[in-house]
Each structure stands twice: as structure tokens, then as C-alpha cells.
Length: 129
Image 1 (cartoon, rainbow, N blue to C red):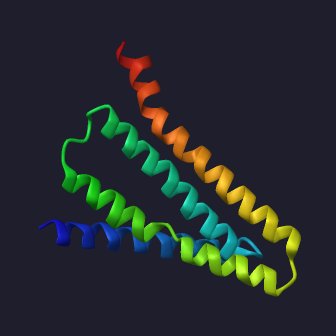
Image 2: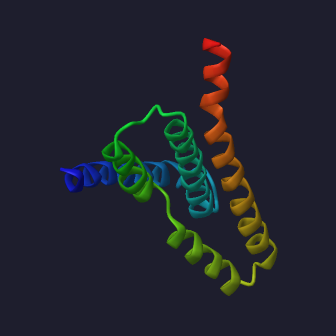
């Protein structure tokens, strides 16, 4: 059952990633960088939220965490595409954008994860305490 659940979560994540990429294709000249950055940022934030919920004891089932983290977020986010885009920037000798993209991605995704992991606990404390 877990295997099928992860497949379903992965299908949803992959479709969302595709939808984001297609919808950004005509809006940004460097559409791939924007789409990859966006899905990795969303994924980092949502993984942070999930970890925050686990630590707060709000997600009891390991199946739910597998569906979300391995399935949905695993298919939504993409380190391999990020790596390919970095390599392409180097091949194009676009060193400035290469450095900016790497730094911005790493710093902001870690910050988004931290924000996500503390977000729900802060909201919960404000609303219910």
C-alpha cells in the first residue's frame, strides 16, 4: 500500500512541476531557472512544514510522510535539473548568473525550509494559546 501511495504522491508532484514549467515558459526569458528555483523553493517550504508537524506530533502516520516527502516532494523538486542548469551556465560562460543562482538557491531554500518548519507552530500558538 505504501508503494502505491508514494506513486500517487509522485504523480501529483510530477504533474505540478510540469504545470509550473509550462506556465512559466512564456513569462520569463530564463524560464528553466525560474521554474526550477520555484519548485525547489516550494518543496523546501513544504518539507519544512511537514517536519514541523511531525515534531509537533501532528502527523502520526509514516505512510503520510512517505506520500508527501518521498512521493509528492520528491517528484516536485529537482536537484538534477538545478545541476544541469548550473552546468549550462558555466558552458555559456555566464559566471555571474552561475554564482548568483547557486548562492540564491542554496540560501533561500534553507531559509524557506526553516520558515516552513516554524511557520505552523507559530500560527498554532497565536490561534490556540
